[in-house]
Image 1 (cartoon, rainbow, N blue to C red):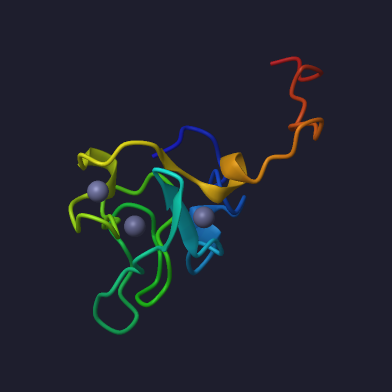
Image 2: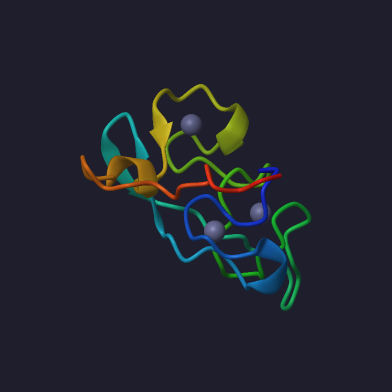
Length: 102
Ligand SMILES: [Zn+2]
Ligand SMILES: [Zn+2]
Ligand SMILES: [Zn+2]
């Protein structure tokens, strides 16, 4: 999991949300629908806290790769990218943390 507070792609705090709002993933320049977490009714993912029927937050170790059906973070597919990175327009400024004094 990421070591900051929010999910990389949807920006939500995984502990405060029902699942990721981003439904797509890019693998080798192809767009795929992500595979949601399916557990028992009301069950939450052990890693990213997504509610059953919702998408995993980015970097979850339980997310399934839509291409090879293996574990996404450990599968053999190349160029697995989230839409935030793919859609980033040139010139669009990323969040600036340079003024933080910590
Ligand atoms: Zn998310
Ligand atoms: Zn998960
Ligand atoms: Zn894969």
